[in-house]
Image (cartoon, rainbow, N blue to C red; front, side, top):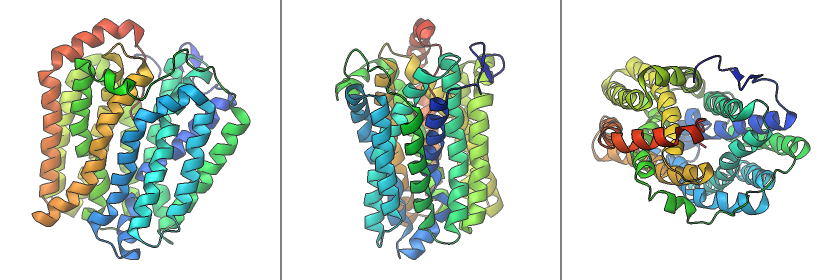
Length: 406
């Protein structure tokens, strides 16, 4: 993990074939779609006369379909190839993002976001494998490119949502559809089909992979962490109650910290302190930050939201390295099983957080999220031996981590 992050495998990270840049560029837009709606959630609620809990279902439907689709993506890509899977995913995003902008009710919008989630799952889960196969400089360079795309997308999504959403909440959806259509054309033009895997993936392979104790432990801990993560992402905009521009600026700063800590800081801390110590400490600090976010004044809530990006960036990188280095399952299969579990929490948090506020007060959603982060840290501590031992045994074969969100 040491050395210049932009000089991997003895080559310059920036010297890549056009196919790699086309896929990485489309990946940026795909990750932008996750945080795109953050600054405009209050505007959507007002425009469609919906409650915060109803609007938060935009995340729930998106990630619920994404979780289930993790069982399908490997099955599809091992049969039709990576290029066609990418194009299918992009096409679905273009269609459903465009339809989202035409919605006349929150129910329609929630349904269209579900279709968007299916397309995004097909694309995102396949993009890394395609980049690794086409990149110059080895898999380490490809993974860093993918992590950079994730961070840039998470940072720019709220910004795009704010700029376009200031005129109308519908425009960010149309803008995403246009950008993904450009990505579709770029991949069509520059990416050639890559060899298919020798063995086709079955629908149950990711579930079977979770039979491994280490992978199951990583996924369980990540489930609780993701609940905390998506409480911040989906519920905080209602707490901040700011204009799209100001909310977009807050989440842009949040995304910048996420990107920096994921790509640059996490590897250095892991090298010095070890992955599990970094992860456990980060989860505990994130829990403390959530309490400040929930109980502080408006300025403290803004600061707590931005600072949480640093912990989320650290956690994303470390979790995925653990998930893909802890078992002997093929990396795509291990990734699918791990993501299958953790994305269910991403679906649950946006639904439950507003409900908790309705049942009690605005503080309770953040208390529950903080407790979830602590439970995640507890799982890491209790299962430390399995996570550490298995990862060390398999380290030579899985030295290069797959980035978070894959």
